[in-house]
Every structure is written in structure tokens, then in C-alpha cells.
Image (tube, rainbow, N blue to C red; front, side, top):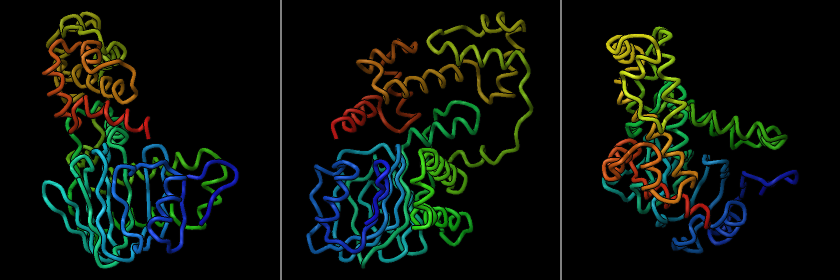
Length: 329
């Protein structure tokens, strides 16, 4: 096992260990994330490298023996699994089976258990959904309110997935340790690299938008309106008032939004308000879902919950529940 003496280590390295010994070591380093899950049989052998930093984990693991793992309450993250040996089966709405040449994108909010068969081994990345959505929003230059959905099964022979695998091998390699543990910047940069690699290489419903050539620079009146909406998310300003603020006609502003922002003024305002509401719920900045809805101009809480579910694939209550669970872990 490797650990850094300069600060809290975020990478666990182990040779072959009994599952209970590995579990104790894992809990000591990362907290008991699976406290409510039955442990694997003691004769199961686990080894490899596992790292976790600020909502992103990466791993190169192998397992000796067949066993099942029951997951705790639904996690708001996506796991990208590149099997290198054996089989992995996820128990959720549609059962997925992975082999050496098949990559899997698993929404952990929909998964209840996994089974490892035939001495399974894998490279993998797990990323908090909020981080993926936030980074996608930055790359596209607009809020994301449609649920981000990745292709659940991919052919690993494609060169893009070889790149993801190479990045995981770099992150888990012994040679990278000195650089990662030299300071506080490299772990954050590695985290960003893993997020970007997944968004750029693993197909999803925004892939086409990411690959689209950069649009023309928006005119000044559109920029001013966008900036006003971003700076005043709780102010439900009308299109007419926005047009007056930016010194153009309402029709010119509406056409500008459709051409340069890709949506209507009303839809863009809703996107911004939902994005801020998600952040407030995830950070525990408001006492209740109702308070968050009202704070960002959603007078109908039921409709707010529907918009939120469509955007993020989880209800506002589930986001708050996930926050409480992380704090109690």
C-alpha cells in the first residue's frame, strides 16, 4: 500500500487483500460509504488502485472470486466501467453485462446491486452528475436543463475509449504519484481531465452540440440580456423589459436569443433558475425544497419539481437527501 505523509492521501494502493481487510483500509481513507451494504465474503481477494477527489473517483481494480455488492441509497453519480477481465452485471431497470471489449456507463441512481464474475477486473471512473452538468454548461456556454444521458454500452475498440483507458492508467500508475502528491493543484487538474475526457469521448445526448463549430459571436444586446438574467436569477423580468434594458425591440431580442442562445428568453430564464436551484439544494443553502422554489421564482412547487426532474434525472428532495447522507457519512 502507498500513502503520502505530506497530506491526506486520496489514492489507495493495495496488493491482493482479503475483502474485509480491504474494506477497513478503504473506510479509513474515504469514509464508510457502504456502511449499509453487506460486505463481500471474506475469502474474496481484492487488489489494485483506487483514488477519490472532490466528487470524482478513478480505479484500476481486480477481484478474485464471484460475489455480489448491494449499493446503499441511490448515488447521484455516473460510473464508466472498462472491463479488462471477467464479467460484471448491474441490477437495475435493464440488466447490463460487461465483457472485455464492452464499456458500460451506469447511472448509480438507477442501480441497486452489482455482481462480479470470473475474476473480474476493470478500469473505471465515477463522476458526480452535478460536476458533469456544470462542466458541460461551461463548455457549451449555457445552462443545462435536459438530463445528461450517456450511451450505456460502447465498443471499446474505438480509439476514443483507448484514450480514456490510457488516462486512467496514467492516474493510477506509480510514476504519477510524486507529481500528484507534490501539491494541491495536480489532483484538481487530474479531476478536470477525467471529467473532460468522459464528456468529449463517451457518446451522450449533448455530443453533437459539443462537436458543433463555434457559433457567431452574439451581438451586444443579446449579451446584455444574458448577463442580466445570470446576475438576477430571482428577478422574473419580462421580455419587453429586457428589450427596453438593452435598447432593442422585443422581436429583435427574441430573434437574437433563438439564433445565438438556441432557445427562447423564457426558456433561458428557466434554465438559469433551475441551475441556481440545483446549486442551492446541493450546497444546503436553503431549509427546504419549497423555499428554493420560491426563491427562484417558481410559485408552483409541483411544476418546479417536474422541471427539475426532467433536467437532472433526480427530484429536488433526492438531491437534498444525497447531501444529508454525505454529511452524515
